[in-house]
Image (cartoon, rainbow, N blue to C red; front, side):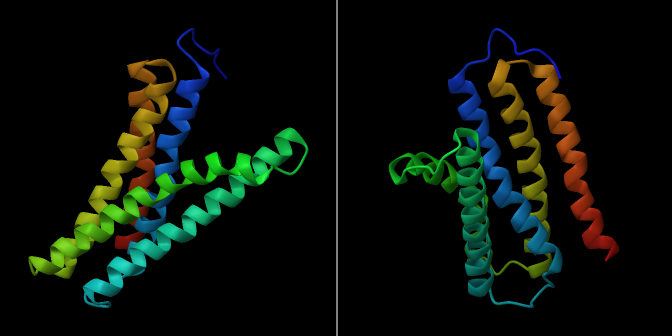
Length: 167
């Protein structure tokens, strides 16, 4: 583990964690997309499905963060202090919401299902790389470690793509 740089701050740590929260929604939608076959659902069903997957992952993040915080402080978290965790966890919905909007646009433009599924997957891969970069860069403004993280996360997200095409 490396030493914290002089650029590190509590505000930057919080910002990096908020950016990383988006990752829950991205990976959840990408994983669900693997199982979807072209034309299996209507556009409306697919949009609602993306939002439901996002809600499930938002709830998961809230639960995990609450338990993590409670174990750090050694006590139950007062409801008032849980509000920040809930607010930050809503960022999980960013990608599922973007996916639902993309599906609605695809429906209006009569896009083919295969193109839509590919678009969601490629948008997810790009988002993973951006989130990887930002979650590192926001901590200490160091570009090289941020690029390294983005590249590693990009390669790991390609495992989901490989799973889809090898399944």
